[in-house]
Figure 1 (cartoon, rainbow, N blue to C red):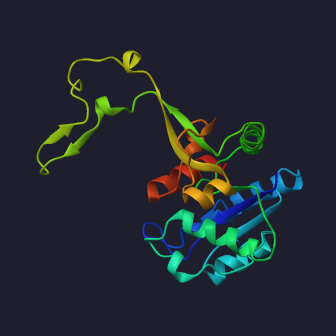
Figure 2 (spheres, one colour):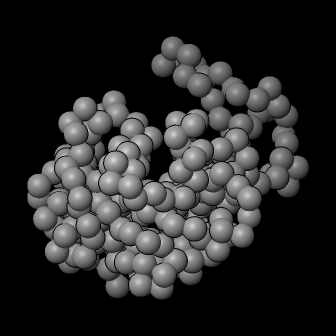
Length: 231
């Protein structure tokens, strides 16, 4: 199975300026994902590592770190409204036009830097050994569920998502759930092209711990990651 690893990193960001290359413990954030992907490639678990970006600065940093940047992503699939499937299909088409075909895409977002290489290896092993269209990474959540969730009605009162929200249902009774953490996605190219979706209806999963599941979106997330990584 030929696997193309795509690391997406567009210019700018709303919450944190230049988030994808912001300094985290003396490294640009994207370096963590590039290093992880290159380890997989060196172990012959994937075939190619590319960074999909519309930014010359990010492209130059990525090349210096050992990743390929075979193109600059078009602006129309790099704005705030663009979906991940857009740049994935763009990369697939780029290589197919060169008669280079891949069986699956491994998507590693720079904003999820705390990945254990063993988790990545296990993810690929599970994917290759099963007849499936997609695999995602998750963490197990014991507390969050619809019993403790509400929607804001008028900035004054809340509407519960579950009518049993105030009936004293214990945690042991509602059980745990699995939350997608955005760290690992693997999807068959055939499924991506046909369905224009990254995740199938019944994806396989790899479980990560909650601390490793931080996806950097806010300054608070960034602070947590720095506290965990900068030791």
